[in-house]
Image 1: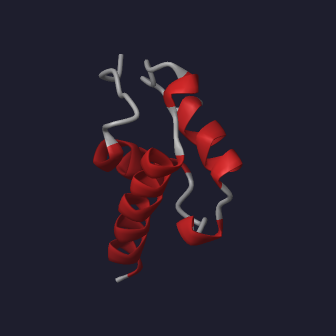
Image 2: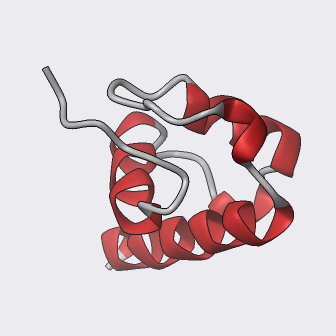
Length: 72
């Protein structure tokens, strides 16, 4: 079983999002979709209502960094 992840685990979430959605440019994802992607990850164990714009933005930026690294 994957380890539990929470809204504050932006780096781990970003890594998992890149693995699950390698073709998606994170900067094109709306926060409503990002919220859904995160809460659907294996191991997500936080309260979906504890999300906020700052947390989603941190996740999106971390995901963007991972995405850019993967692009070479």
